Image (cartoon, rainbow, N blue to C red; front, side, top):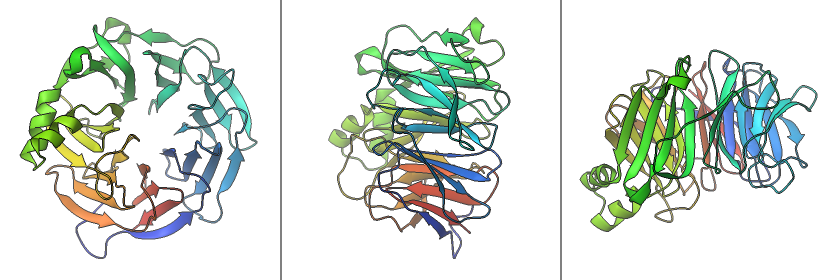
Length: 341
């Protein structure tokens, strides 16, 4: 996806919403985009090939914050977020064809913070504020396949994600003493053997990268302490993208864990308690970051330099996603914009 040349991407569709979007997920075929909004418990399904009005599903009983496409183009996984209820910590498998919950996955003791679907089979990962990461089979309700071990002396909620091959997944967790974060890599075929790679992203290294790109010492220190809220591999596995709740995103080396680039949220307030939206494009060439002023910053992944800003939202951009098959991206505030070249 070339953001440098003219005329650049244009907004091709706008999916109207009544509440701020909390999660975006494309189906692997690129045919559908799923948009979740937590505050009104609504899931919208947009046909990326035909356009038109999106299908809308109300999930008032369960609630919805996080949505993740599965291999079936009419079924998704979702988690309720902070909505109160007897099953608020579950993950659900939903058929959007007839709005039926096909399976429930119980085991977490607190809110689910992330879901990652394997690209090669029906297994998926979930992480939770209870400090656990669990591996599941989407075809089997009930107990998880396993609860994965975290590094010693960690605190706060972990995060987990598969890489693009499905052969590796990563788990991140914050070190105690505000020293930084662990990233442990597991062989998805032999996860019981423990991580085959244990990386540490030190807070001092993040601070040094921020200072080298022009941040004041005070701001660099504050941003380096931001809580990690998302972890994502690029397609090659050479870079890992970290989103935070402090208005900064990072790319780290997928083999060594060294900090490669930092990207700061722009527009309005200097920082936000909400997670910063950030994603790789599907061709690995760019990193997209959402800003407080409604713009989307498009950076070159290899150099970290800004290539373009997309304008069109009226409020903070909370979610971003890249279509895995077509030259298309999506960004959301209350409304969701679909951009094409």
